[in-house]
Amino acid sequence: MAEKSSAAQPNLDESSIEYILLGRNPDQSQEVSFSRNHINSWIDTGDLQLKHRIGRGQFGDVWIATRHLKGLGENRHHEVAVKMLHPLKDDQLFSFKARFDEVFSKCLGLTSVCNLRGISVQNGRVCIVMMFYEGSVGDKMARLKAGKLSLSDVLRYGAYLAQGVHDLHDRGILVLNLKPCNILLTESDHAILGDVGFPSLLINLSLPNPDMIQRLGSPNYMAPEQWQPSIRGPISYETDSWGFGCSILEMLSGTQPWRGRSPDEIFNSVVVRKERPSLPDGLPPEIENVLVGCFDYDLRNRPSMAHIIQAFKRCKDMGYGDSTWTGAEDLKSSNPPTYTDWSLLKDDLRIGDTVRSRKPKNSCRPECMFIPEGTIVGIEEEKDTDGHFFVMVRVHGFHDPLRAHSSTIERVTYGYAVGDWVRLRYESGSHVGILHGISREGSVTVGLIGMDRLYEGSYTDLQMSESYCVGQFIRVKASVSNPRFDWPRKKRCGGPYATGRISRIYPNGCLEVKFPGRFTLGENIAYLADPAEVELVNFEKCEGLVKKYQHLEDLHWAIRPLVVALGVFTALRVGIFVGGATVGRCSKKRAASYSPEEGTDQQPDGQNGPWLPPSMANILFTSPSR
Ligand SMILES: Nc1ncnc2c1ncn2[C@@H]1O[C@H](COP(=O)(O)OP(=O)(O)OP(=O)(O)O)[C@@H](O)[C@H]1O
Image (cartoon, rainbow, N blue to C red; front, side):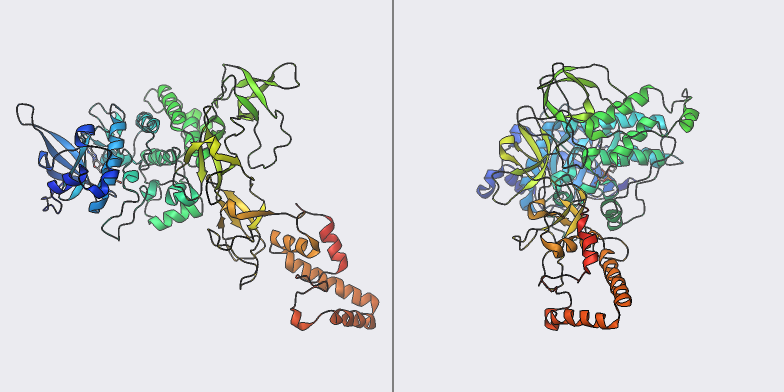
């Protein structure tokens, strides 16, 4: 892998970068919140000497270099690794340096992540200087015959890696690029995190080469929301759980997830068809449980790094995969594991919290709540295998506190609970999204269309909004002339918006909608909708027989042909029993109230829609389906 290369001539000299980095440019001074002395991440170009390249990745090349430390009485030097990024436009260096300095200062003192030494410019390219390690897990796998690691190594490295990611999350940094090549190994065979979020440092900075596609990660390891974070997002800490799962799978199997597929094919598998990488057999049930969770399409249902650490440490301590381990046969014969709903474990409940019964998932109905509102007055210490426990809840009107399972209740703070549909009060446009978190102090995080990451603010920024569930029928409001996403119309040339059915709700509130009333060969194509731009359509609200019938047509493509067939059948029966003359009279009557100019589906009462025999109308409209 190592290769020699002579350094090309710099196209940006040190003085110019220093000029930019020190904020002497008056036009850009507002962006400069740092100085060399303040953070001291800057390494002079002359103090760094590139030796040879040892790796090439999607975000740049990795070199071995020598760093000279001046000013210590003698000229000392040591070996470092340098990640030389792809060229950036000169005017982007400020933003990049500011982002890097933030990460640099946040990583100080962390032993579970790669030791960053600073930033420099070599050959006109930004270089991130870090400690030189023994190599990566990817290198180790490449050296092994089968290309995969033993279960005990995977558990050990997995626990270290999860700790590194957790430490970065604790400081507000997302990694977004977890993969075996970015897991570095120390002399004592400890795994540490080698990427401290390079994709986020680079995103939205324009690159001089227009052919280079900017991605928020490496395609084979990217979570569904990482591909289009402002539409199917947001990206959040659990986005790294997907990348973690991919890394563990690759270590266990020796095969990269989606190996051999192009980025477009991976997008289709992961994002459009919602496929997940397949797991190898014979995993410890707890690890299988975690990995299944890591590959949940909805990031809210994935385990957090804290859950992952617990599982990996526990399995490591139990000796799974060691030479002394004798559980392989038990694993084969064990029952299929039950999978944890990780979303239920994220509410940390305390005495004094206001709680209410949790609505069943994907239910819009607040009624039938066992505990409409109560206060936790006691917590039992014993936890079940999933980490749930019992709490005592004081409820108004009950003499004694009620005992409730923690998975069945949710914390309500300032009137809001995680998962509520909310609207931002102060936005000029209407921003409707889903509450992801609310602290006891009132700070909130909300998933909103158009934002790559969670909106962060206060509960006072919010108000409750109408909620949506899978299965409901919606259409774009008539007042919205230009919806955010394409939306089909009933007729080709500018008819009213068609009615569709919600088939999925993304964590930012974006609605995936299908049109079951439209017969499409093969897959039923999904459209997207902004919840702020749609309205509910249901049977009760449809006024008049024709509107009700049209709503039924939206339920399934077969309704219309069925109704036509029944109509023909009824007409034939009537014809047979009443006789030709009568039929002739009926036809004349109908013809009298029907003019060809009005179109084929004009009703005698002037409404649009196919003609229904009265018996048929009775059948259809006396038993509403919704
Ligand atoms: N600090 C380091 N010390 C020693 N070797 C390193 C270091 N950082 C990276 N490497 C080596 O460089 C190789 C490639 O690293 P790099 O991060 O460029 O690859 P990548 O993860 O495939 O790319 P990218 O991170 O750009 O997507 C690693 O497998 C490892 O061998």
